View 1 (cartoon, helix red, strand yellow):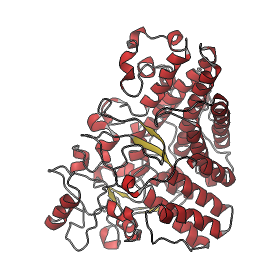
View 2 (cartoon, rainbow, N blue to C red):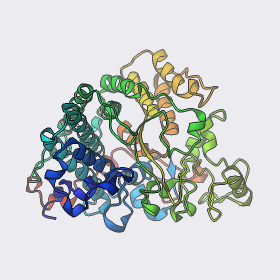
View 3 (cartoon, one colour):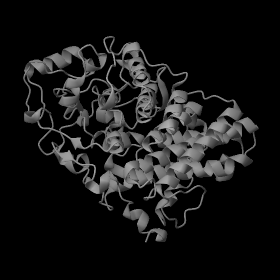
Length: 508
């Protein structure tokens, strides 16, 4: 590999593979050329499907990196404040101490993965205008590629850029903006320039979606709502609250909140609330390397059977008894369990198997273990959600708060999410001031638990991670029961990996 960014060039083994069984009808990898892919819009659609496929593929050999699922698990869940797993050996990742280890594969992985998506998206954006087909087809394909690029840069900015509050209004370093097929030396853009490019890409994508008047056929495909949702997430991270509010409302339009039955169904099959997800079925599985093999409570993978994923004791205790979300975690009640690790005693173990018979017979239940996420097939098959309307309600509420809009407006949004939806018929938001912000944060933690937001939210808010051991009211191992201040670990900012700086002389 001459330059690290060469991974972003067209990889036709990926681009020729579509989601589902369509890939069986494409030419073998060695027979596909760039000219063939972009001869027609029909062929170019396979390139867009290839971007979707990249988000659920295994990377970097045996490290277990599985596309977007790894970002959610290793970078969002593990190092957060409300996600417990009995893995003392992972303390360097869970406690965020690898952020400045530029030779670590964990520093390198997001850079590698997202620039691979960006490089392939750039090729589509550059070449699609010459493809034979209707103008509407070209517009729709380009809009999708722009949306992928905007998403990848949004994620890179959160990982490798400072939180906006620490960026001196965006003048600190962002990431490298590569917007064509070149892979030469390039400097870091500022964080402000990075977010400006995200906005530009999304503005153009939204315009093209509108002009094309075309719609998607599957939830794993991009559409205008996905562009609005990415816009909302980027804007709330950039502390651009008016934009975040407006885009969140647009993003969730047409995607009503899921029913309680859907909420309890395992978060592995798209429903009316899902704005965008990645395809996952038995015909396309990563087996024990998939996201669901690491988290789904019914997975046969050892990563779940021996170390199930648990909610923090403190957050669990904040969920009202009337809230259906409380029932998605194993309440230890008055049963015994090992307080140093969480392993359930005999009676609590029996209760777990009674409540959730889909557990593997050789699984080890833990107090507070999750039953929110369930695989559709073994060892870990499921569709992976990226955006839901619930997140958009929470972004709207937070954006309204920081614009100092009337508390009644914010309370109405929170009531719509939590009471009107049926999640908690007894819920009624009446708080104001700082207490209202804390309530928004608490319900964001509850609603989005396990979906990869925890660390990203704590970084964005500038709140310290404060995990407690059992004796102090928590349920974390002593090695993970730490307090991490926002100023620690390079301000929670991953450094540019050495594999980039070794070859990019513009960064010397």
